[in-house]
Length: 567
Image (spheres, rainbow, N blue to C red):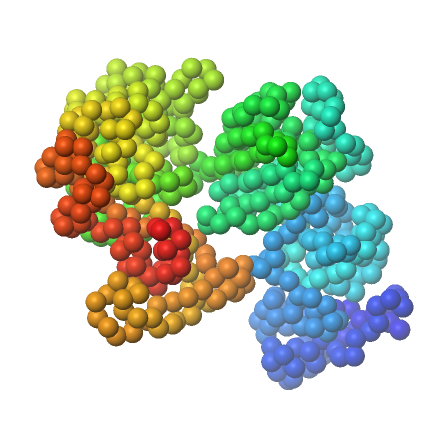
């Protein structure tokens, strides 16, 4: 029985018993799905016969159907699964099974595993020769899934980035081998390609962190996207030690040291863009774990408004930034966007009339007209040492990436008291707790009270996907309103655009405390953070929770998200 070309009515001459001819033609499926009317289909059939071109392609070019509709119809016709890159997260291990040249030649890309079957993305699933070649190349049972032409081109580009790598290297267990042999194995072509592809895929997915976690000899790879961890792939035991060793080599760490934590950094060039990566190796009971923090210095720093700060809070911060001296702190837990806020503040104060110097670890953005210093602790350049050097270099404004210890905190506070505007970050849960944290670090209360001008605390909540969010009614009390009537807010649904999560991107939730004379008196008296918070609220401070509820009422996020990041 002949197989029919997925893009036309014309039968292909190559028959197979395994894949029978479908009962309906593509045109009938398109009409049945209400993607196209019968008259348009018949006209395309006639034109296709004259021009010798597939009917489906003519409908696509004429705008009668879009690429996704055509792919859905092809999948329905052959009883196959249709997938979209909006919902599909390709398995990096599957992508690495086929050389780039072979993927281009076969016009097919392996994307996932299902039990013992390899799923292969194709535009034309009737290409049995390609399927047979893939089965021989991978030594796996293969099954086609249908994608649009655009999605397959994206997948081919991902594979193309890894072109030129030898795929025929035989993998052997190396976990117990000496360091010199392990280093040689870590430089083998498949390991190099696998590590690079995992990082490239993480960057494409918008991940801020990549985790390599040991589990029963394997390495579980997970990405943190929009603050939430998601499974990416699993590296088998035979290659796990090689991958960790490869990461160590890239970040110039000691490949033979497996008992102590190590920190390093590396970079990757992706489509002409340089991405910096901070690496942490942690020895666990189950084996070594690696965490990669992805930093893109080439992107533009966001403004305070773009990261979600409301007008009232933004005016408070801008008022503090107009001062010629004093300290402005961004506080919150790791991953709450403190550095982003700091860069936004730098953008407001950076002018040719002033000298602005920074000390950071790492330098996340390269800023014009700003003198930036990178901490390098292995060489002896710490925050404290770098900050002392900056103080002797005649700056007007100083940005300190983080107040990590008593020494750096004390120098920064003293700088704020000697005519410098100091911007920095601090790990606290709220703005009113910043003063107590500095005092606990060993800075005298009167110095803290005199130096602090403004403290902002923040969190990052996931933003609702505007393509699929759904309106629901909740009580006014649930969203912080006194009125007892019901209020319309939104809840997540999930669609192709948001990878079925219901969320796309993140938005900042803030509380901004302007340090008044009354608050300074409480700081000198070593008052508790709760007492300072009560006074700040009385003076107009909006708390994190209240700001989050405002964003719920505006339709930006959900009550569940606000509770997750503020409770």
